[in-house]
Amino acid sequence: PGQNITLPCKASDTTIIAVVWRRADLKQYVLRYREEQLDPENQDPSYTDRVDLQDRQTKNGDVSLVLKNVRTDDTGTYECTCRVDGNTKDEHVCRITLDVSPPPSLGESVCLWIRTSSSFLVLDVGETSQIRCLCC
Image (cartoon, rainbow, N blue to C red):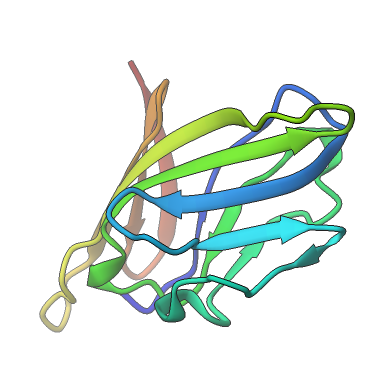
C-alpha cells in the first residue's frame, strides 16, 4: 500500500485510438483514454487522480496502467481493451489479477503479486525494491 505500480499490457497493433481499463467487480471504468486524452466520465471515483497510462502515445502498443498510491481495496482482476484505427470493435488485450496485502508491521516488507496470462510479476518492497518475473 502507498506505492505506485504498473500493470503491464501491450497491444498487438500500434494504431490505438482508445484504451479502457476495467476492474471485473466494478461497474465504472478504472481508466478510459480516447481522442488523445484521459476521459474521466464514468470513472470509478476511487481511481480519480490515481491512474494513468505509462505512455499516453501508446508507442509500440504499450497500454500499461500506472496505479498510484496502491491500496488494499485495489485488489481485483483488471482487464484492458483497445480500439485500433479503422476498427469498430474493441480488442481484448490483457487480464491481470492484482492482490494487495495490508500494510506490514514496522520492519517488514510488502509483496505485491501481479498475475498476467503468461507470467507472475512479484514486487517486493522493503529497504530495496526488486521485480522478479517467474514465467510459467
